[in-house]
Length: 428
Image 1 (tube, one colour):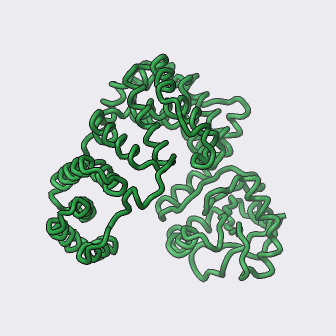
Image 2: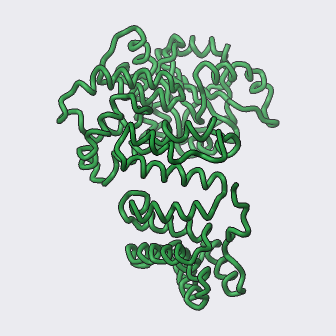
Image 3: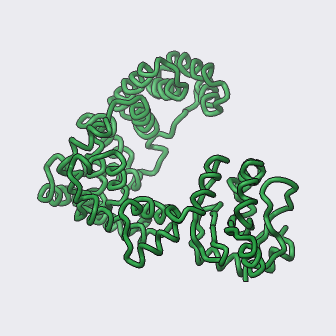
């Protein structure tokens, strides 16, 4: 038996039932010919409070919800402020959380007037998005659980499967999402002519649900990368995806036992040459060189081997540019800042200064964070006068940035604004 609860009575907006049992709610919904809307919330949930204050109080939203739905709230957590009604329904809240895989708050569940689950959605919504969700909840062509039931019975309408797979993924059912996505790709999407297959939406779907090199999606990215890049207007879009898959399969599996990488490496002395040789046998030489650098960057960072980490950053930049992509101001500044934080090598720092200078020019000096990076690099290179000039400009541009103000103060006092490698443990 389910008894919905909510934090406080509302004088206006959506009317959430409080004292009816689940059986009474179903009887009321059947009698009035309405769907049932259940909001799963927690007392600590900021987005849930936003929905209370800004969406459920919207009279347009309330009119639609109250007209079509019996609306109830179910509290997913426990609080010292819970009243007796809330405490009496802890078990029901636990059952809902388990049965419907509640992993995101708020979660919205929709039931038929007979109490059968038909739809689900998650996350903070605007009033317009919430209205759209209410419409989807009563539309059998968009109800998540209705479509899922049809799929499970073997009734496959392929136009519905991208939505169904994406929704399952969003709701935390990764196995079901993968099953539906692979079915859609293998039996429909990859059978389309190339001119129909290679659209932005299709490629984004393929990228999201392709996890391994033995999937057809990987082969499409590998062999048709130039087409995919042109669709997105982005150099190396396909290449970066291929790199990530190879990194996970050929390097991560040889270096790390599980996701707790800093706790559980296979070895403290990776056979980089051996790893590169394996990749070269399977892929082009250029992939082995580039992916190996990515793996080394990750390894040296986790092991806190800052000299090798910085050396690898510069090596990769010299070969492939900033993260193998365009020389965007963001990428340039990010690399320059990493070298500032972890390097004490003059050559590397001078290179970082040039990167930082380029980032500033690309934005016409309008980004205070970039000026801060530039000033810190100059300061670390003992160019204090220049550093103070640029840090003062950064502070004037964004006087509310406490980090910039703190750095400016430290520079004026002649204090370090960084941790040099001698201050940090260097990995073995």
